Amino acid sequence: MVESTSPLHRRLERREFTRQLALKSGNKPEIDRKLFDNVPIMPTVLRKNGFEVMIYTQDHSPAHVHIWRAGGEIVVNIATLEITKAEGMSRRNSAKAVEIVEENQQYLLERWHGIHG
Image 1 (cartoon, rainbow, N blue to C red):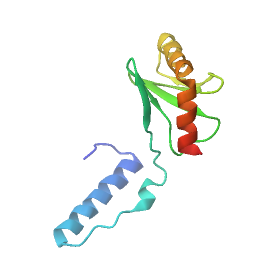
Image 2 (image 1 turned 135 degrees about the vertical axis):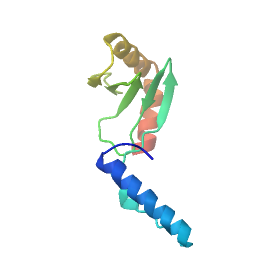
Image 3 (image 1 turned 180 degrees about the vertical axis):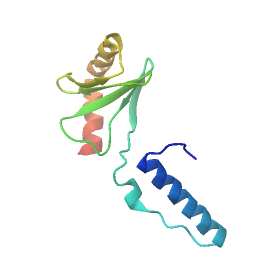
């Protein structure tokens, strides 16, 4: 089990406990769909030089990507290459992340529209 006190982790632990009890009793466990309503899925659409480029499935416009490396995150608008968020990433890695988006701009826009329509 995950050792955390966040509400999401507590709910996950309760659901797993309930599932285990249902399995022991021979009943088929029900999946609580509400548990996953607010959990964004973040498919990695590109990996390059230690960077992971992700597009959240439950995200907003304009088209942008979340790029992770070594615990840092940067959010880059795909069309304008503007950085809209940067946390825990060096300027050097931020510049490299923007460069990756620029090199793969058309592909990333296609992936964004494939996920968000």
